[in-house]
Amino acid sequence: MISANVRRNFKSCSTGTESKILRRINKIINYAPYTIIASAIQKDRFIDEFGKLQDDLYEVALSFVVEQATMALKSSGEATTLFIIIEKRGKKEDKQLDDHFKEYWARVQAN
Image 1 (cartoon, helix red, strand yellow):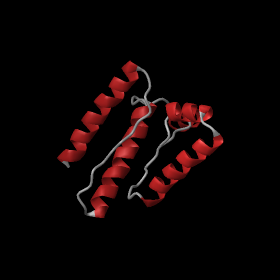
Image 2 (cartoon, helix red, strand yellow; image 1 turned 45 degrees about the vertical axis):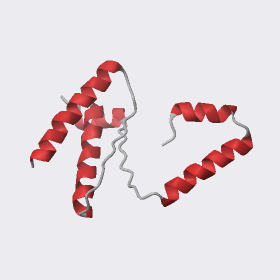
Image 3 (cartoon, helix red, strand yellow; image 1 turned 120 degrees about the vertical axis):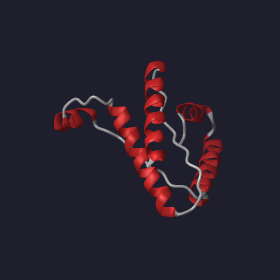
Image 4 (cartoon, helix red, strand yellow; image 1 turned 30 degrees about the vertical axis):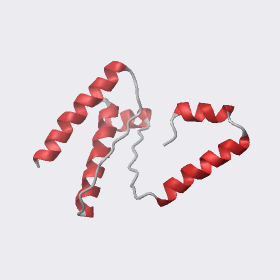
């Protein structure tokens, strides 16, 4: 995942440097053993279909990612490290998501 800071830095790079960096990133992506599980919610459509929920939409998205990751880990049968990368939001929202993740993960581990 290329962060906004890296993308901003690319703008100041020469085309040759940018191409080298992108080739190296592509090489890593092509040969590294990993799985990407992503979640995106179209807020307006979600609310139209399900109404406003008690859970924050970001919590719903995070729960989906953790669920999918847990199933992928179980089905692989291997001891694996799990990294979950979440876009930074505000301090309050980040803490809320962190709390939600800790609670959710504790429930997952209990089962």
